[in-house]
Amino acid sequence: MSVLVYINSNGEKIAKNALEAVNYGKKIGEVTVVTNGKASDSSLAELGKYGASKVLIDRSFEGIDEQQVTRMVATAVESTGAETIIFSNDLVGKAVAPRLSVKINAGLVAGATAVPESNGTIAVNVFSGKAFGYVKVNTDKRIISLLPNSIQVEEVGGEASVEEFSGNAGESVITIKDTKMPEGDIPLPEAELVVSAGRGLKGPENWGIVEDLAKELGAATACSRPVADTGWRPHHEHVGQTGVAIRPNLYIAAGISGAIQHLAGVNGSKVIVVINTDEEAPFFKAADYGVVGDAFEVLPRLTEAVKKFKASN
Amino acid sequence: MKILVCISKAPETTTKIAFTDGDTKFDENGVKYIVNPYDEWYALVRGLELKEANGGTVTTVTVGTSEDDATIRKALAIGADDAVRIDAKAEDAYQVATEIANYAKKEGFDLVLLGKETIDYNGSQVGGMLAEHLDLPFISLASKLDVDGSTATLDKEIVGGVQTVETNLPLVVSCAKGMAEQRIPNMRGIMAARSKPLKVVEASNPNKNTSFEKYALPAPKSEVKLIDPEDMDQLVELLHNEAKVI
Ligand SMILES: Cc1cc2nc3c(=O)[nH]c(=O)nc-3n(C[C@H](O)[C@H](O)[C@H](O)COP(=O)(O)OP(=O)(O)OC[C@H]3O[C@@H](n4cnc5c(N)ncnc54)[C@H](O)[C@@H]3O)c2cc1C
Image (cartoon, rainbow over all chains, first blue to last red):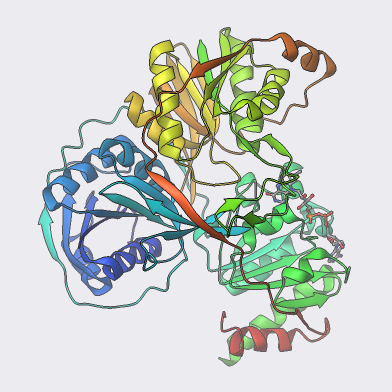
């Protein structure tokens, strides 16, 4: 089966979730990648390692304007005859995949967490991570957008051929005025390790101990909703049912009670560590490891232990 | 300015999720519905603020059955001028987007707002599909929206940061946190909502491109392993050797 995978190659390096999408495509069929911008031929040829046979690159435009990317991918669908089109369900995928779905009349499975089942249905998270649903696509072509961190990236092949491509992307009607990228922060949705804290930390002036641990681990920081709502932390750190949904390998939660709306956004994490003074806190039921103790003592102690571990490994 | 806000219902956030009919249907028994928080807190309230500042109208649109009327009235109580319900059970994002697009094409709107996703199916699909149907730009995950004449300026989330963009109306925008503050309807709003127009229009019944065949609940977590708060070396050791995450 012919599979087309769109990746965003506009960043400094090709992101892990793009490699996941290529890998995922390879599990379904013969993969052609389509992308745009100015990534070097050699970095694109590397996608062969992750399962791409061919890479089409449109060098006539840069960036991730959703209308331009939609037109380009639609042109590539036509020229490759692909029956399955794959995106990462990241911010670009969320804007482009639905547009493409209408443009080429292909059913969209948004946020797939696994390869298609033998009956053709595809698993997605529903009810904010409280359950799974199995989606059937009723059109000839299908679009799958893969939830980041759902599959393990593997090296499966060699080099891909790279071809210049004209995707008829047209003009952008959106002008970018300003881009703010906070220095040194690890973007939360992609982070493999996350340290998070809640109201138990008492006030924004106490976040130093959270940041210290995050820095030592190379983790991103997150928080509960009331913490973001009261302005202790920025909105983009708010995780949960009405914030960001994340699924890191490790989620460390300090001073968070574990309300159902909070759990909904984090229970896809592989391993959960909970630090709370109250042994009855509901979060312990969702945790793999629990520490009943005061975050003000436990967090610095954990930071020290990580330091020691790093020094001896 | 003519503003359209897409409103859907969603199960109240503490709902215990269960399935019936051999795990093929969401068990609605005893489920309380609310207005999807992203639609209500961010899209609707920002629509009202823009109307208050610039004049115009705020209409809500919902694809749903008469069972949705209570949640639609809640949106009217918060301040929408009128509401439209397209009379069909919402089962697929493509179906919903196509119905709304057919209605919006007829009426013509300057701005279409919706929440960044629903908290039940979490698809984030309707906004982009709607924009493609209407051949309009789509700004997804916007946390700020200002309108000056026919120009819109928005902040949108990008990987690792925030981007400020400018484009012309008409426009479709999916709204995320930061866009506005939740408004609690007051008594007057609730009374007024009863007499505001809720128009029911006939569905055009497009195809459903996807269907949910089955559901499953995640496997229950095994018992938590408690670690001595004095001994964080042990926790690090377990995270390294047992959980293999660091
Ligand atoms: C519609 C709706 C949507 C919502 N969406 C979200 C969402 O997306 N995300 C979200 O997070 N919440 C959400 N909530 C709010 C949620 O219900 C909880 O109120 C919130 O998660 C609680 O935050 P918290 O755990 O930080 O605070 P609290 O519930 O106040 O818990 C603080 C915890 O800290 C512990 N603690 C206190 N001192 C210490 C100490 N020194 N050391 C260690 N532990 C300590 C306490 O024992 C307690 O367990 C939503 C609510 C509603 C109604």
